[in-house]
Length: 357
Ligand code: FNR
Image (tube, rainbow, N blue to C red; front, side, top):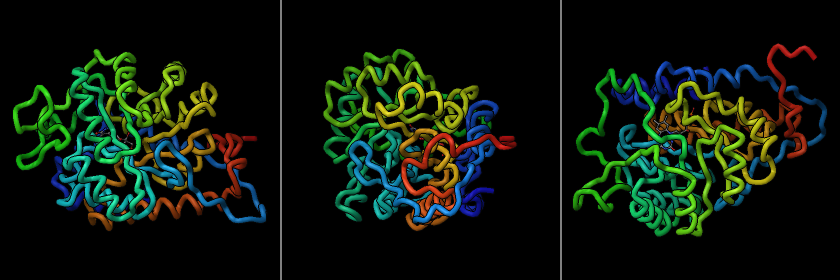
């Protein structure tokens, strides 16, 4: 059970089983996938009472997104497989709720159309572009140009994917490519691809900090790194001057032996907390999960699969429902914990379940 269980049930009824499995699944034995939610369940919040004030308005200033909700839409691929309006529906719902949308490079709608849909709803809607650095720097540069001219306000470079994770469910279902009629629209007409056609997204173990330096030299947009888990990498990211880190194991879809982000967040906070914005995603399913992550040092969190369930269940309205629900649940969780301001969101609020004092 979680805050979105009914929407997931409905999505499962409506989606082709292979597409549901593509969205729901993780890598290998799905240990990391399970652990992402279970790790939150192993933590409790030690609430304060009679605090004499309302909980704070949960808004946060993020790079390229002032006054954002503390829950972001994490980048997920191929929204048109969930609903015919795909990324456009997601973008409208995110904009309507003041939520940052991180638009995936592997979207089935081109980023300029995604940003335009969001800005029709709210002229200052924040859309960030998620990017896999490509082995050919020319391809990366063209993708960045597309994101910049679309009006994206930050880049999110996903660094946890030197190769694809082993998606066992997809292998069993024979789900390897997008079905006919769908394309990874951002990859259209890029150097090295077929003329007028869609180029493959390449993953490469050759990608290094050097590629990131090249990228940062070509853009003035803030750059956040997504997929950092080791405190030493967090230090390196600070040394590189990046603008934020998203602590993530890719929703359990890459290294199955990776720890849950919420379990490594305290170490990363100890290592570099306060030097740049820390975000987290993976297994966030309740307002209490959001409060836990904020108390352990995150500024904001992302949600991935719940957005896909909302989208599949009811298009834009379904995504809106997901974002409204989690927003209200964060306020409820803060009130129940007696949180009145950032000073109350500290690690002391979080205790292990079975806490003995
Ligand atoms: C993802 N994720 C992802 N991440 C990314 O950087 N680029 C991408 O294109 C995708 N695509 C993608 C597809 C699907 C179907 C899923 C479920 C996830 C990972 C995503 O951004 C995020 O890290 C996780 O989804 C967060 O975990 P939860 O909220 O799904 O548990």
